[in-house]
Length: 434
Image (tube, rainbow, N blue to C red; front, side):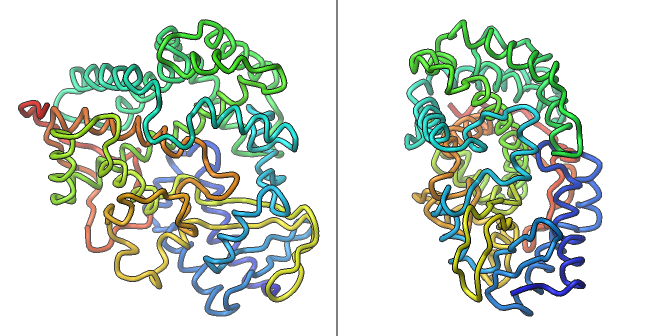
């Protein structure tokens, strides 16, 4: 079913444009602030709902010259598409390949078979994809505790995004590359510069010299194979050159960036939901820091409310017979996560913080709720990053009472955007819970 010109322009203007403006690879803080101010994310969901009201379950084809885009409007169809990767719905869409090619052109996500499978198997092994608790968790959570303690010593009575994210990046460098990378801020800066170029995909020239410098620096850190880091696990895999280990690591470090955003947002949501905060504190006081199930559920629920990968892209590798007609080879597929996560048709909880729905459930088993995607291309770090994030929040709750100073959040209906760059907390020391 083809959208009219008016509906195509509206969808591009209200769904695609704000998503691109905020930054698909690295966020642009000013654009996030504008999205928050004008409620653009909520309006994007409303536009998707209007498409469904007019076109039914779809999919609806946006007739973009040279690259038609199929917008998915039905949850069951989204599930089927995600389960059929890479054939006939390839995760390596042209847009994604153009963006990630700036800094990780050999990452498994944008690789072709058979290298995709080899690189995917490598990532599964390093990140221990199916294990809620990584085998190196004791060493890694010690790093988290050290860096969070240092953060709390220096930030005083108020915590904002910049010092938190600086501490988060130290955690990432140490957990991924080892203690020898702790102070290598230039590595983080290089990746950020490459990612800003990647925001423009094929419209920005590649920075080949910077890219080479970044990968050489990563390789030097990996060569140490520091104990207790993912670098140690990578060395144990003894990967051959075709695995392109530095490109897989670039993706790990890229993925940790939205992990930090989600961690900070989760702290904000807990601060304004007293019942959930009390449960989290109790878990921190009595639970195993390696597997804080309620805090992990809070993180996943934050990702439902504020997905850090709002646009899940696929591309058809052949003509596909589908409801209402044929999806021609080369058609782009858009699964817009906020539409499925925040659709009012889901009920009153669509805009409320309700982590209990994730207790005992692997998010990958519940499409179209796709905080970590789903199917064969599901994120291999879907347990690893929440393990690190929940431990970071636990360290803060262990030592501090937290009050969200900014922005104002109304729990009956949470806003469509939560600007992590604007969040500020008042901290008050408390007796340690453990």
